[in-house]
Image (cartoon, rainbow, N blue to C red; front, side, top):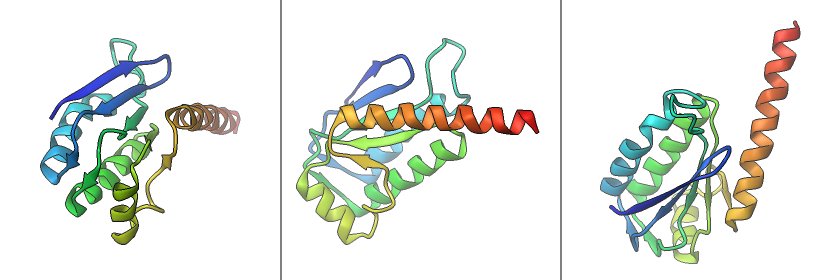
Length: 134
């Protein structure tokens, strides 16, 4: 599976270069992204938040879709963002049919995904400050 990772200040933009996203590809993606789960900012100073750009993906297998949801949940369990963007209509339709579309944090554009990551970062900072004051 070919991916392009573009490092931004507070997140990584991961662009998939495949037409069909399968469970096998989801496992490979999970393996590639697992270092970002280790901590909010890893030892190299790279942020752990992920924006997954799926503009090149024109179909998704149900098993791959479920694996994406599981990957998203892992990131949120580690207080990190995982936002999917640029879903093509056939992918959205499969996700909707599998009743996963509403569960995934997705946006129409990459720019909107960036906004969500930044808002979630601010929310986490505010919650951390709130708990540290108690």
